[in-house]
Image (cartoon, rainbow, N blue to C red; front, top):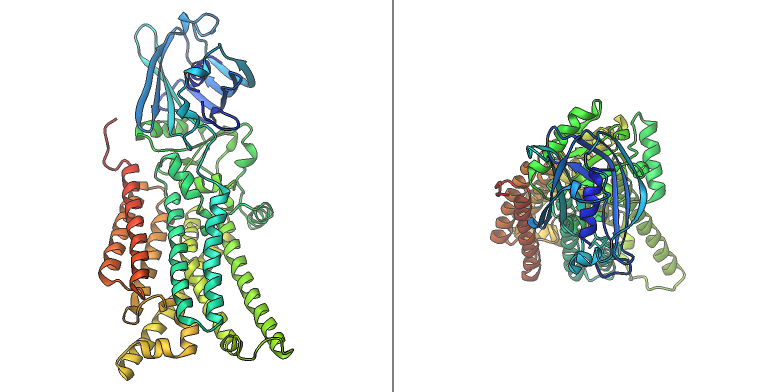
Length: 559
């Protein structure tokens, strides 16, 4: 309870946010130097400025003996906001002069702070969502000033931009766009339907791009992590209780070992790495390697996973971070995404078949004109096939990332097989459809001197293969091929390069720049407005990749 007293006093100094309940909290304490004489396994501190109280819970081991001094530094958004040196011997009743080695087990314990303590904290600390602030304490010997221990903790005020309302709103907007396209197409307004569908798909693709940014293993500011979390539904990362139970059961039944991180949060500290200097995080991983024995530590990815969680210290980022923030065990992430994709596909098939039956019944009973939805009723199987192809195209970014990532995780042999079969079937079906479109376009050029003649005038061709090219102008029908290549390469770097964040960011910069140049030069979409919309998305994606490159510390900025 000695070293922790230094940190809790400093956290207490920091405290107000304007909400129903103002608080300042930290739930993970990590070491920040090699050969540290202090190990933290569980840590929780919550400051309530309303009643000037501090709730503390802590479990760890200290090997520090003798008289010490503590240098405390508060860093906010990359800048040093406060620094002070504390001498425990000068504080009456602190019980840390001298310090004694041994286990430290505390709490949860509620402490009343001295009057006026919470008033010293700037009010902005309680109002800014996803506060990016860290407290770092360096312990030195009192006589020689030798550095003997270093710990740090991230601070949060409980406010975040990750809101369920944002996720629902974006999902509803995307769904309404696709539904409007289907309805207008069924009513015979094919040109309007094509425009609505093109923009709806582009918007959905943009949301997937935002979600993919959050899946990179780069240390990002908390507000970036939270914002991208709003779009993870587009990648199938949705936590539903019974689906999590199904995923855990399936994994256990097929020879896998489910993760139990969420069930052990009561005595386990899970740290979501934020952007910080590498010398903060790497020594912590080196220390864990020495201290945990059989524990599996992946230093490059900044996470401890599939591990002996009795060690109680887990550091996560990348796809695991996304799953944890979605309240999902990391071993369930792949199967959850797969289940949602398969379930959504089945629901769409049922809706189409049901709509076919209802329209036929209404026509038969004379309650609807026979020419209403006639094209759909006559060729509904072809339309359904085209819809399934379109769903495959929509799901490619999601499944390419998750399937390739599963190859590196190997949650169970059966899940690896599922990933291989799903990815291969999607690539084969889309590849075959793409070459079919190219062959039809070449035949149209040979016979009619124009690729649009067969591609757009043949209803069967349009309903079956139009999902690949209808959003593009006739002479740019081929653009779906570079788009598929771009999507697959992007998925490869996100799914397979989790241990190498710099590789991910450099690859994303190159890919997004290439895509931006291509769409600006070719302008392949059907009209000016659609081109402007998609070029704007490409610009945003490129800027996002540049920001990621900065966050990755590839330029090695000075401290």
